[in-house]
Each structure stands twice: as structure tokens, then as C-alpha cells.
Length: 229
Image 1 (cartoon, rainbow, N blue to C red):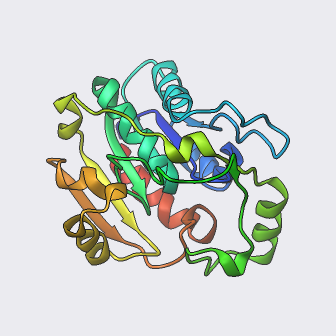
Image 2 (spheres, helix red, strand yellow):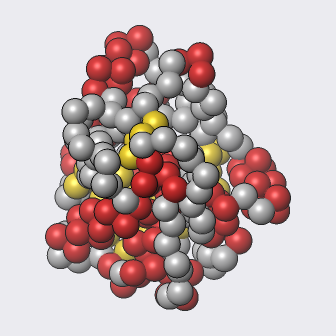
């Protein structure tokens, strides 16, 4: 079985620790895995005041370049935006992308976001599905969560390299169905805007929470392994 380096990038409020259940499963399948903590998300005490969208792009790019060969890039939720921006910069270093309940955003996630950061909301205020996440996992998340830097929410990249369009991409649809993703593309939502541009997109429905690295780690691992192999 061919082995490909894998880079895991979590979404809002999360660090590399979010992949603690998936990473060893991927490594046991023989893959070299790097989990990324984006700038400003190291801890609740981290300085986020000057963190920008470009800082997140740079962190992902550096993780990819450090792998030494083309990688499978796995991006979750809010990381879909900087992840797609990286494929525009170094498409030759990305063999495939797995978008975990997210898409290749071609615009800012919230250009009019107000404030300096966005703390993790109370559970009842989360828009996304948390079904299947245990109380213990929720407690760990609450304890380790860091507010999302405002600069990362408001920022975006200018995409100009058509080579990114040839990268095979898989969308793992959990809290939204593949049909809902396709409807969002037609409606013109920028958080999935790149899906209208990419040449090779596969949709996989995996009903469940928006955080399948906790609610369905083995199922998500199987998808990533299939793409990496």
C-alpha cells in the first residue's frame, strides 16, 4: 500500500489535540501524520490580537513543506478557507484534500465579524450538530478550547493559480448532507465556492456531528486512509 504524508488541520477553537483519536489510527495504518495548531489557538491565554488569515495559511504551508513530499491535506470546518488558499500557493505539494464538513472557501468566512476574537459558544448556541460526542469529550473541548482570532475570520486570499483546480478533493458531509452542500454551491455561498471550480470532487455522506474526529474517528480515519492510499 502506498503511504502518503498526512497533514491534519482542525477548525475553530481547536488545536492539534483535536485529532488525538484519529492521528494514532492513521499512524497504525503506516502513514506519517502531522497535526497542526494554527496561530492564536495554542491556548486560551495565547495572544490573538495580531493573528491574521495569512498567518493561518503560512502555518499550514509550513507543515506541508516540512513533510518533504506531497501530502494529503485534511481540513476541518473553518480550516477549509486557509487550506484552500494553501493549495493555490503550493499545489504541487498537495496530492489530495479532504474537506471534513467544510469546503474550499473562496472568500472570507465572515468579512464583517466584529470584535477581537470569537470564544467557543455555549453548547445550546452552537449552530452545528454535536450528536455522538460524549460528555467527557465535550468537557475536554471546553477545557482546552481557545477563542478564534478575528483576523482569521475576516481575512481571505486572492486565488490565482489554476493548478489548485486539478487537486482531487473529497468532501466528508456530516452535519450537512451532500445535497445540502450542492445547494449551497448553487446559492453562491463563499464557504463552499471552490467546489464550483474544482475539477475532481467526491462527496461522501457520513451523517453525524460536525466534529467526526470525536463522534466517528474510525469512520473518518477509513476515509482518509482510502484517499491517502
